[in-house]
Image 1 (cartoon, one colour):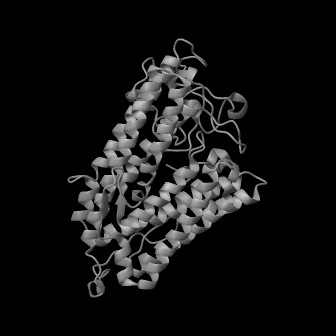
Image 2 (cartoon, one colour):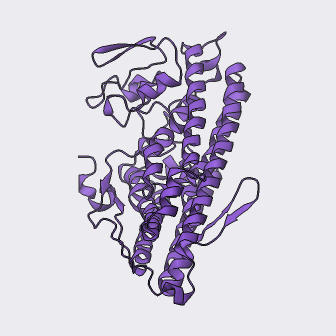
Image 3 (tube, helix red, strand yellow):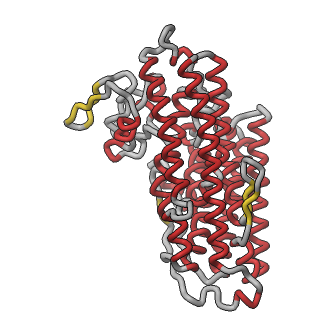
Length: 427
């Protein structure tokens, strides 16, 4: 979920029955075979995301039952370990409306964390002209004011959290999903573009030795949010099962439209979402509040595994957590059969982006500097690492557009002011 989303000017998807005319002569795979394998990979990826979220759920339960430093550390690790499986699924967004309709339930960002819990007023402030719920702090208040209504918040459960998601029709009011859980595990990162992540104490969950008040309610919130994450990931998985809405639409509908949707997902994630809103914007502003996993300093991994997933989707091969491999006919095969030169261009562009992402990940994993340090002002070397990620993602998106043209399709790719109209950023 991205604030300020912008769609590039362009034609809607225009599909003709002749889009794959002549492809058979080049021994291309059947388009329906590509869509079947694509659906199989989606089903497997979301199943793995549920598995790793289940590990997070167990760690959260243990933390709430026994709020020690060791259990908080373990819950944080489980959160970080849960991210790769989910991030690899993001290439299914944009081209599949069923996915985009659910994505905001699990991965919405950025969030105004004062909606959920206590914040550092000196850095966060006490109000926002654009968000009346900026410091609602549901954890501290058993009755909350929503417009003209007083709402009973004495019991923090999944139903209450769902009612707060995007309350007031404001996308910054993120009450559920990975990033709400991240905030509850780490707290605010008050280090700016300096070293260090959030540092919430384990005693924030200790009802016998409570820090910052409302430890029982904080635990209830964390528990409800984590349980709800499992349920919402289950919804995303269900749309790809045998009778799921996304799979059925692809396999019973126009095959050309389905292929166009695959490429829309790859192009839009590469360009407007990842290169633009998640990366270039924060780099332009040197603002750690614009980084994706801002409380945990895990953004480098989120970006990296977005790219890993796009490579998997394009090549039609996915290695599951249990080591089994799902593979079959792919868009890569279709494009290579239609235009060998374009096919090589896309594969090369994916490799270039993966290489740039690897440098970013290795830099962060080494402990040299985290992502938010890399985007800081007066850090030419760090800025260059992130700029290379942006540059290669943009080239990757253009390579996808070339593949679309080679297949005789037209798509609309998601845009971003940070890439398309930089002068408008910050206005």
